Length: 425
Ligand code: AMP
Ligand code: GLY
Image (cartoon, rainbow, N blue to C red):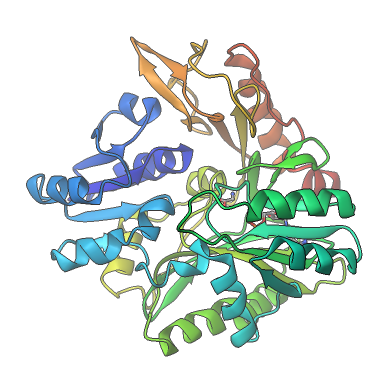
């Protein structure tokens, strides 16, 4: 089978690498891919942007692609799944309408309210003065969210009214004359985050292993929010009871709600949850795709054939499928370019990147391009070092060693990925 992966980050590198291991797969193409996918044997980059749907359809037809799998949210927002299906091409991902769950936080929060999915109390606004008047009456911290896609940078946790007012102005300032920006102001929830990702075929679903991302830039979960600085899997405190609660109060009602609205959901569905110290869960957000960097940890633990799962899910054949995982813990640490998540410096050659590593270590490429025989930085999140260990601490120690080996000027990363769980170990 020939597979096309759409996207260009570390998540897509991990997806392409894992798909290539399937005995059913003869060739993996990645559009547009990055320096990491360019260097993988049996994987070929295709120079078509993830949002160039016409170009991608032309390529899928010409190369006789058997299955296309979408990595990021941008093509989903543009309706890539609907467009491929209209041409009779097999693709795994949600339709444009279903992807509204991620694309519009305002839609998503209203959906959660309608189907009684536990979430933070919220209100939506389009006018700066009304939003600021509302914020003035609220307790702090207060969470201000842009409704549209912001690559992980659309949430500001305001500690006081000055910060809240600035965030409201930032997100509600019109960028395009045509678009009316919208924001959500919601209560701040205490607790620990959990990424719970499932695959749905439209009728049936399977859960993937649990994982936890680290959104803040700095150690101890300080500093600005980012796209994700590192993740680990599994989350040791996720009990069977808690998982049942997540399935029964978040996942199943959401899938049923979508089906009720004639939008049966096919694709990865990622629930970003907050779990309170008392074990109460709230849904922070939905993503209509796999997480980055969660995928780099998850797929490292996946023992089942990833291609077969995607094939089954895209052919409504997930019923009865089991997903097997390596018992070891996985951690993935993101190495960033200086300035991330703000203005970044790129174009630096990367020293000591290697594919020649033991089976329990892999360096996925997020934002780097091929330059001669080596790599040059091209994005804010540059590399993602993933490792497996008998304990999370062992995996973390190994990942930190390799994170220190590769280098470029100004590289930085969090040395505490998994800190809450390793403290428990
Ligand atoms: P979101 O894009 O909605 O997942 O938000 C990004 C990150 O902001 C989350 O992963 C949390 O770390 C944080 N966050 C979002 N909403 C809340 C909330 N209501 N309370 C506390 N933290 C939040
Ligand atoms: N790791 C968070 C995300 O992919 O949205």
